[in-house]
Image (cartoon, rainbow, N blue to C red):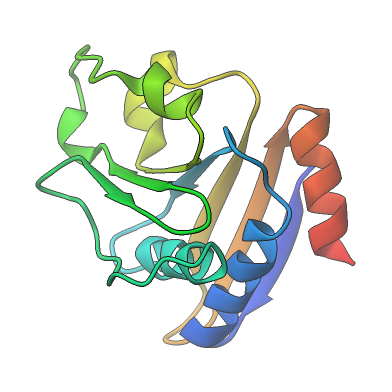
Length: 151
């Protein structure tokens, strides 16, 4: 599988990268985010939201599992950490096939429910400020998006 790696040095750079990604995706896009606590998953999602015209404050949906934000397109922000070792389907297909963009933090916990075609994103802490953000496109649509991001 091909991968695309970018290093950001500030949270603003991480958000700008996500803003650029948001301009390239279409309704129904699924973006998964993996990374340790504090790596920047929610910061990345905030950048997506800004570009989608979300005006509400975006924060982690840890205790609610899913938060919905309205912008030019709906942004569905999931944190499925609490679903580890669960086979509970909370209506994922409605989000994955819906009119918005779906972001799933800790997506490895619901692997069996994820669509085959999606953009997997891994965020790793390099040091106090720097983040390594690696994109793993699954499907030609996401491959083309990554090529655009790499420009």
